[in-house]
Length: 326
Image (cartoon, rainbow, N blue to C red):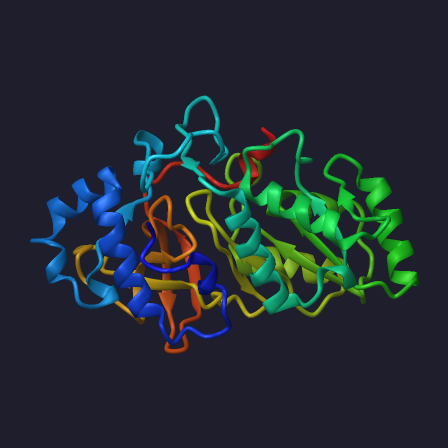
């Protein structure tokens, strides 16, 4: 049994974060065989862990090679990363999809308000095409919850999307256009138009589809083509059950049940709450998998807990949302 009611983590206060993280660590050490094996290789024992920076983070690559679960449960639902025939995909087994729905709904409401006030448009594969994508499931649910007649997936219908956005702009309808980076760039090049009531949110994803350019360059293209002041971003991973959001300054902000730490590139056991290095993520919602993930992302964590992502470590696999449509 979990050491705390997982539903209680979705509060607006991060006051008890460290206490809950330490409880989750001790519980997952006892109930997650893969994570326990990793911990036994990296620490002298769970009693030596007193702060969140001491909690071992499981390398994200383990999701490609191992079944990472806490407790035994039917392996019926999973999220899988995008990939090609040359890459291996991560698989995140999910005990309770409702927990994921609660996580992304709470986070969206925190940063963007009531989803019913929005028209939600996805430049992503439709749900029936990619039922194993956590991002597609999230956007599909937001589309349904918005209840707007024009909410939907438009990945292969750019002309229809351009006309729809024009209608929504004329009606002054707040609209969220969320998509993988290469799809947004394709649409921007062929169907530019001024958007005054539309928020554009990129979810990353370029490798394998376009020449790699920086996030700043992507945002410059999109702001120019659509005449918007800023581009929003979503940071999520197949291996997590939570997302962070940026509203245009390149800095992501986590919901209270998620925290990003930074580890030294040369000595991964040296972990800090602020500074530059490789990002570790604590996701309290990931109770039945592993709540402590060592990513391949280079970045910086600031004093207020916000963070930037600079890119991936050298030699890490091509991965990300851009490969969903290959």
